[in-house]
Image (cartoon, rainbow, N blue to C red; front, side, top):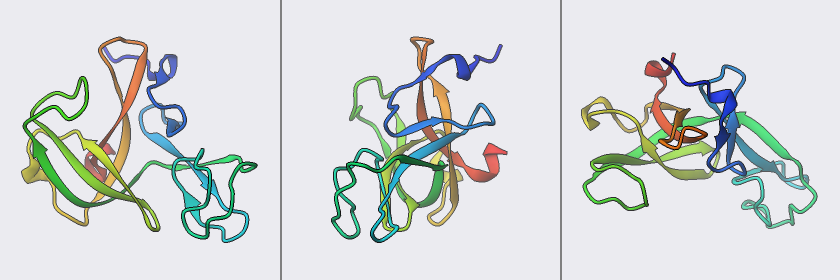
Length: 141
């Protein structure tokens, strides 16, 4: 039985929300009114490109995903609740915006730098919250 992700809340609501397809995620950025650059997260105090304040900017949703830059298999839990082993990677989610993320594949041999990644919602054991995981874009279809 598949869990209804729409009935759950995001673990980090200032970073992402459930997309219209009910499985993938939209990331929440702030778009600078001065230089038009995107900053992440949407509640950043200033533009990461030009430094202008972003206090009056509304969040802009963009499809969650990006380009895998590098990855590593973790054999020690670096965050509470992170199972080991886990695969973590640096993913370019927008121009000049790179974030670390957990990659939901069983074996890192399925990964290669430069591949397209998609952010998907994964239910947490509590049953009322979902978190963000990255999967290869061709798997997410």
